[in-house]
Image 1 (cartoon, rainbow, N blue to C red):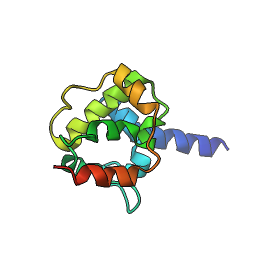
Image 2 (cartoon, one colour; image 1 turned 60 degrees about the vertical axis):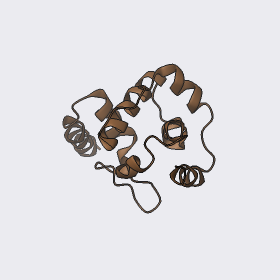
Image 3 (cartoon, rainbow, N blue to C red; image 1 turned 90 degrees about the horizontal axis):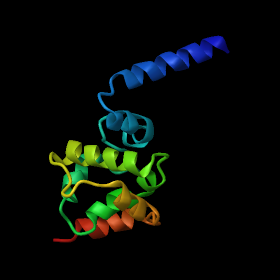
Amino acid sequence: MRLAVTIATLLLTTITAHADSYEEHDYILNCSGCHRMDGSGSSVVPSFQKMPELDGKLGAREYWIQVPGAAQAPLSDTRLAALMNWLVERFTGKPPQPEYRAQEVGRLRSTPLRDPVAKRSQIRHRP
């Protein structure tokens, strides 16, 4: 048991040692399990590398907060807002305008999407 705890501690330390900010740390702990460290996603989880295709489209801003993984993340509204600002800038190359704020995040995450795949498709096909 002691060996298992030591190994788990070493792994967690190694993973989080690379985090340069709380936002990156929150990404590692709350997002990277499904979206991977590089944001590439999988066959069932969208890639964050495709965020630019939604950027600026009507509904994208809300969508990014209302997807179940974000809406139900065990983070305060303030921490989730900071994470989303970091995430959008990292994967679109520019910060969200306006930046996410805790009040907006709290309002949006209270109604998570039931079908995020359909909503993403709907947003993608908007001009």
